[in-house]
Length: 486
Image (tube, rainbow, N blue to C red; front, side, top):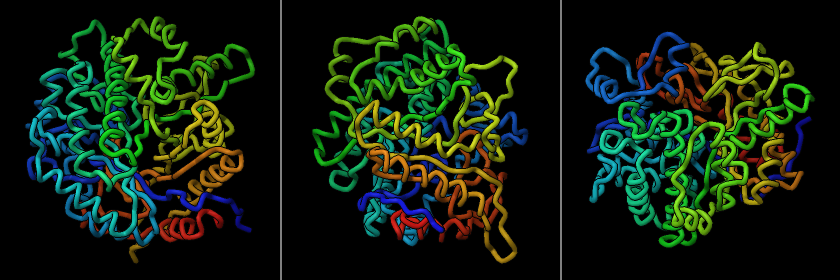
């Protein structure tokens, strides 16, 4: 018998994507190069997983831009740029209440700091947003999602420079004015805590351009500048469109103590502190008390000014958002088994099953995280990524039987229902990659998340035809019954 949960009547069911993983049309209609455009496909799985955190230099980037032999899947995505109407029609058929997309900064400002925006880029996103609104689907728009204008990397080493704050505010202001009244929900940065690990992809940092003594110091400067920028664009949004809301987003990894030893419990606590650091700043309005010790331990510093303190204090986010895929273990022995994740390795939990990519599947961890965040921030919560990457098989009659994905999502949605019973204010849920797209970390197509199968392989071959998976009709029913029948 199906379990029944009471989701709010205005609950925002939907799906999530990113521009650099599905749009394609890399240099079409005036768009500039981005960090995502240099992400190369590697046949060796170990090399694929290193791409996301690999350091880059100016020479390496320039080599990638002229490379005629390599495969760069994010340059062509799944060609959403030309298929968006058909894809949005499928989202509407599923009953989406919201659709999370990101805007490519370099499609609006090819050099990152151009004074005049690229009208063709603005018009494309306006067409997409209008198409969503035609079906009463609320756009949930991320300003920066794992790509950065390369021109600003070359010019000022991306987010290491405080100058990038003004460039980002200018970019955001253009969007807020253009889409005033059309976009009610915004997110400043995707998984912004990842910039401490992926300085190039999300921060535009080039190793040979860094002005600081260490790469880690450059990453933490980038972190601080993004925090200030997020507060500044929150202020700007509220001035331009008071009815719109700005959210802040982190990647959430619930790390349990390896044992009941006090040292392991402390390791779990410290894992939470490091994971929540950026959200603590943007949701509470200041750096938390534990931050200075963390900075001292890592031998890093941030250039916190009096003006920064004021802008952060006065412009906290309207809602908190996060991605959740797995949990891990903190503490334990150095030789304990490790498991893969979407940004790093974590200790293995013997009580959990794993996905094909070695990610630990932990639905209850989602409920734990929701309760922690509700108590910590006391703001509405939006789960903007969650899902299962798997090798899906298209049958001879063009079907995909993905019962494993249905099971994964069902168990996680049940735990959202339990969190709602706990009193947590969850406002929406957008599973990741609602249509198959290029993997962020591995740059492969074969790691599929979607309800919709796209006929394309890791080498970019295929018809690009779209096919509904079994999970399509299942999720359609979940939305239709507002989560009451899972």
